[in-house]
Image (cartoon, rainbow, N blue to C red; front, side):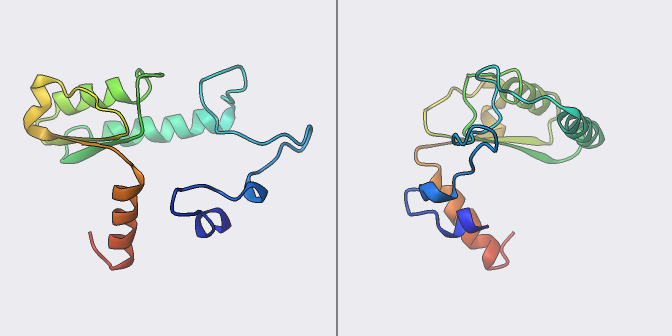
Amino acid sequence: MAMYQQTDENLKIPKELVPVCPKCGGPMTKNGRVDSRFVQDQGWYQAKERYTNFLEKNKDKRILYLEMGVGYNTPVIIKYPFLRMARENPKAYYVNLSVEKQPIPDYLLDRAMPIYGDLALPIKDLYRLSQQGGH
C-alpha cells in the first residue's frame, strides 16, 4: 500500500520502496517470461488451476476480457486466449488498454474496445469511480 500511496503522477515509485533481493541486495523485478529468472513454483501452478477453473465456469456467461498493457512479447499467455474465448462466446466483450495501437480482429469489431495511450489515465479514472461507489 505504501508504494501506491507514494507513487507520483507519472506512476513512478520512490527508489527506497523498490524491494531488494535478500541474497544479493539487487532490485527486485516482476516475474515475467523475459529471462531465466521466471518463477514457476507450486504457487504458480495453484494460481493457474484457479484461473483455469474460473475460465471454464464462466466461458458461456456475459464476461469482459480486459487486457491491460499486454503486447506481443508472449501473446499465447493472455492475448490469444482472450481473443479466442471472446470469439467463441457471443456474450463476451474484449477491451484492450495499451500504449501502442494493436489490431482488433474483424470478428470482434462489434464487441471490442481498444483504448490506446497513457494507461495511467483510464486506471486513475477507474480508481476514482471505485472510491465513489461506481460500478
